[in-house]
Each structure stands twice: as structure tokens, then as C-alpha cells.
Image (tube, rainbow, N blue to C red; front, side, top):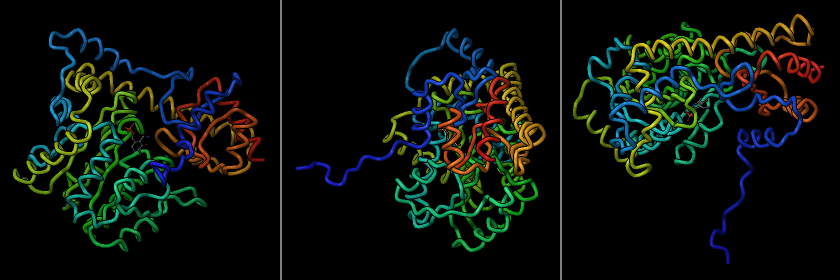
Length: 409
Ligand code: PMP
């Protein structure tokens, strides 16, 4: 007799499965272009100087301890996190229209958003629209909750650019009040963001159909090196009063603080009007979700990020660190592009490698080419052809360019 008659073993998670194959590979010149984590020019994880200094400050302070946080999380962190994403002069903050809840990084924020919308947004009757393609986990986060998931066109594979026409027509044809998940910047996996003019068009169309927006902000400051620029779409929607429905923001500090494993993040709801009763109700429901799922959020990472955000010197250091990371990645984009285009004269147009932004490049390599990169050249990337540019450095970029050239020809 089986106690679990319907259970089946699932294949490994594509990304973590790739990581396991990379770890097991004994070739000394292997290259990891899989997982989205920043690496320094020697291919090593990088602890941001701002984080190192904040850790010392935190653990040597008199009131340092490992007590439980409140269910909402660490208030000094939440307050500053809202300012980072919305801007210090944010109208929504001044008008007291923001509810913030600490979450298990960006993934946890998305999960809380899904649980909340399923229960309270028209009783979960609205579909959630995800870009095609999107970060693979988006699908299962919302599907696991029983939400209906749809997709909107995003990437035009022929022109390797934004399918704006398809995107806008999806917005127009989706039933009134649908949920649209937007990548705030550094779209994963394509590395392709709308221009500010395109963003405006997208936001006006979303508002015209009363759609509810979830902004997934996993790379603020990491894409361009500038926190303000990377929050353009969010701040424009709110500060210009474009969007009249509530807006949900899922904020992660995994990439921009290099705090991947510490799970630091927040979910913010921006209410269109100042209503103490609504804000109080939202906060209490967030608290109920968090209490039942994780009891209270993790303290250490949020205290480190809070130490940075509440200390002007550390905040300045962090802003320098963001530039260090984003400019090294951009340098690698240019080097790979130059090698392919000018030195090797590899067939095809590689312009997109240079113009894409953030951690990833959607290379356009087929799954067969990706498989050959792994088997012949010990270069690991996901089968969609998405490469984590952070895995490139001065020591391996030539090898990678030569290998791309070999598999393309
Ligand atoms: N959204 C997107 C688009 C991402 O790429 C990621 C990380 N890969 C996340 C959310 C969540 O990351 P985390 O839970 O580590 O903050």
C-alpha cells in the first residue's frame, strides 16, 4: 500500500541542477554562467565593502542580539527600504499610503503577494499575467497557490528586442482588473528593459484597463548602478499619479547587497488613497500570513541592510559598490561583444549582448549550442541561452568568446 499514491519524483530544478553538474565537473577551466549571483574578476563571490563594514558596526553595537523581530519585521529596515524603492521625496510616503512587510527576500515577497491577492483581490478570480519569457520561478510561485497564470509577449526573438506591440495588445485584451507582473528593471532572463517612453505607454494602457500591477524589483541599482534610474517605472507610476489602483512592490536586497543567502526583502502596497482603516487591514492580513508561515522574518540580514541605509557613510559606500558591480558587468558585455564581432567575426549580430542590462544576457544560442558549450567547453548556462554575465572575467572571457564562436559556426 502506498501512503502517497500520486507522488512522482520531479526532475532537479533547472538552475540548481546546472549548478550541481558544474560542481561535479573536474575540468579546471570550467566557467559558470548559470546562476544569477555576482562574481568578482577572479570568479569569486564578493562581500560588498558596505556590508562588511555594516556587519562590524552591527555586531559591536551595545544593543546587538538575536531576539525575535516583530511579525512585520525590523521597522528601521522597512522604513528605509520603502524610501530606497519609492524615493526619499515620495508622495506616497508623505501621504502615508504605504504598507510594508518584511519578507523572505524577493521570492517570499512574491509569495505573500500571491497569498494576499488570492484571498482578497476579487477572491482570486483574476488571472496573473507574466512576461514570456520570465524568471522560471514566477510560474510555480503563483501556480502553487492555485492562481490562474497567463503570459504576455515580451521578447521578439527575430529582432532580439521588446515586442511592444504584443505586450500592449495583451494589456488591452486581458479582462479588466487583471494582475500584471512587471520586472522593474534588468528583466530576467532577457536583460531587456522598456525605454522610459515605452514604460509610459505600458503604464497608461495598464491604467486604462484598471489592471493591478505587481512590480518585481530584484535588481535595483544593480542594473545601471543608479538606484533612481532602476526605479523609474515604479516612481513614475506613483509620483505622476498614473496608476489609480493599488500597486504591489516585491523588493529584494539579494543582488544589490550581495546578501543572497540572508533572505532580505519586503513587500510594499501603495494604496491610491490615505485610508487608515484599509492600511491597518492590509498590515494585519500581511501579519497573519507571515505569522502562520514563518512566524516572524529573519533578523540578521535586515539589520545589516538597515545599518547601511541608516548611516550616510555606509550608504555612500553601498552606492559605490553598486557602481563597482554594474560597471564590471558592463565591461564584460563590451569585451565579449568586441571579441565576437571584431576579433572572431562570429556569424550573427551580437549587439544585444552590449545593449542588454543587469545580470543576464539572452544570448540567442540554441539549446543544442548550450549543450555543446557544456560538454565540449565546460561552459555552463541554462538551456534557454541565458548567460549570467557576472560569471565572465578577464581570465575567461576569451575562452567563452572562442567557444561561442565554435558552437555557432
Ligand atoms: N525576481 C526575479 C526576476 C529574480 O531574478 C529573482 C532572483 N533570481 C527574484 C525575484 C528573487 O530572488 P530572491 O528571492 O533571492 O530575492
